Image 1 (cartoon, rainbow, N blue to C red):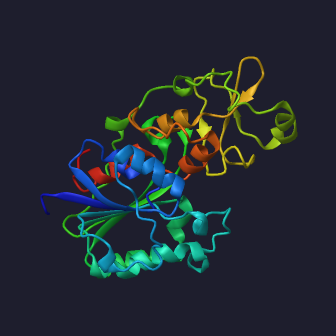
Image 2 (cartoon, one colour):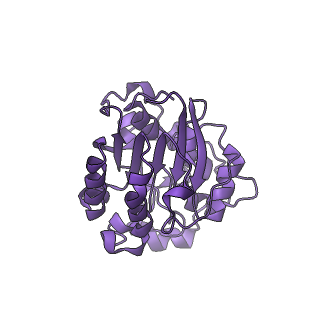
Length: 299
């Protein structure tokens, strides 16, 4: 195993992987994402501007040599909302291309995160076959934020592979455990009108809304998606206020639930709608740290 740890973050979004590496021995040398808003957030936090190159056409020579590849490819091809079209979905082409050029790059460690629907996908079969052909040893695991004691249900499928050792995903989550209740995460001003759900919307959509009362110690929120605030059904939870009003959970509060540090900020010029859309595509930072520990990398 090389002493220097360098990483490339594909489908980088707002930089959950870079956030997990903050203060560690890992140096992220390149990131790739086509979303200009996500790239602004990434650059403002990590002083690295992601490359907007289309990953479908990326070639091995375009990628800097690195110890680690991390990727969180689009989940729509493997989700129920995307009709689970798998490798026939055009949005899977970028991931398929990265699988195909992997033999010419051979990072020591390879990581992938996606929705639970990826587990039985044809793309996963293709990826695992390639990893095995190239001599990688791999492990796959389902991780939910609730396993860390977080009052949030966000199950995700992770793959960790290594050419230099057997990855071991510990089932001991205690070192990353957080004992706070949901109410402890809710720090936004209850009168912030940007968070308010107007009364007519509440009455119209109440049957399909997941409204949570944070005064109950066992309350938890459900998985946030990029459609939070725009899509009313199954896109994330809302908060019941004591006076009967209902509000959305602020971007800062969701960042806290996702395990981002206080150092991480959305640009002050970025509105809530854009911030919600971006973080809905992100990853629990604690889960990334757990996956890195599977190959002996401490963060």
